[in-house]
Image (cartoon, rainbow, N blue to C red; front, side):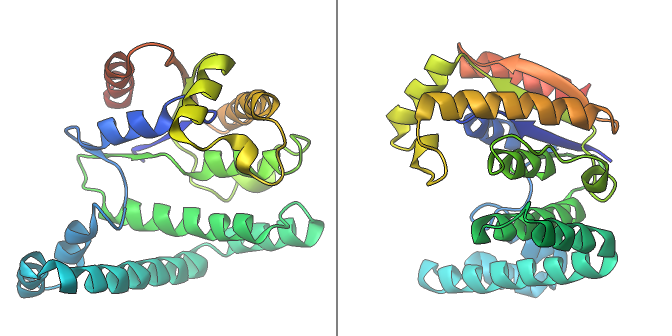
Length: 243
């Protein structure tokens, strides 16, 4: 499976690198309602429906986009649940044992599975699927909500599609914190993290632990320092993806 995940602490530059990669040749950045809906319509509806969609005025298309996005996610969640009962059991076990408690994390568990299933079905045979918020990032979210005390293991990796490659984007803590503050949102804005510096350092440690764990299940991890120019990092990551 040509499937790559990007992970890293907030402020490392994951989103910027991901967006730059998504437009490159033979790279598919996965389903996103604002970007890939026309592709989804062409793949799942008739030729005439695709033409009507492309020609629809903005007032109409915004409503259509909302409807199609909800339908696509609903269908993907339903199909994934039917085809992957082990994943559902794992989620229920996590909830019953208290590992997953927050509603936002439960929604993320569902969203990650639905988005991956939908994106993988949309990917062309000669494309590499690259994901920013995937199953390894979900493992990081699970870990940080347990203060780093829980690292998903066999019960997790035995039921998820393990990425062939994990691109770990990192930068010094002071640079990550500075970037977070410049964009107007920091990790400390989450109600379970109190300090931006210690929160960023904790997430770095968690990324390291989950990357190490994923390697046991077949993922290759590549570490990229993004403390300098974005363009250089993008080219490095692109070369890794396509190698």
